[in-house]
Image (cartoon, rainbow, N blue to C red; front, side, top):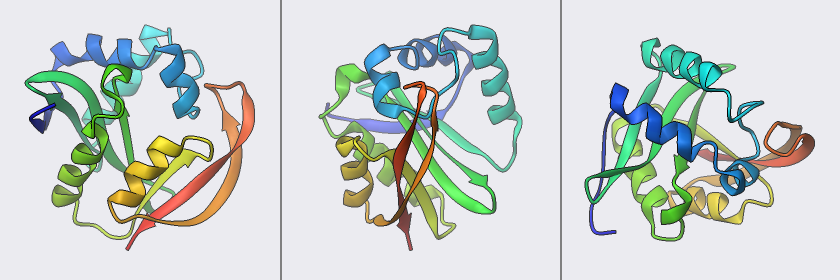
Length: 157
């Protein structure tokens, strides 16, 4: 992928993002997902809340001018958090890493925390390459796996 850029989410992007977030393998890897990835009404309500919240930063990732994912940042229990989702068709092409780097140029609040299922080596690698350091683990219910699993917590200074 030659070019990765971020832009504000448009209504027309929602169909594509919904499909990405329904992919079974992606849901398994992300683990901490919507209870029912096929519930479009819940997805739309979630997107409306995100897009209406002035404290949430949310962008689509464009790869070679087409939507290939999303990246965002929000406050959870007083901590700035990062989240991203990339179309499985472009995994391993550096898209997530470039999107995170672009986001971190715009989000200047530090520290920023990231979380990933502890067995999601790819996502942990994206964050550590961006300068995040592992600071701990936690256990929580992962709807994408219908089980409690371990997640790795990372922090960028």
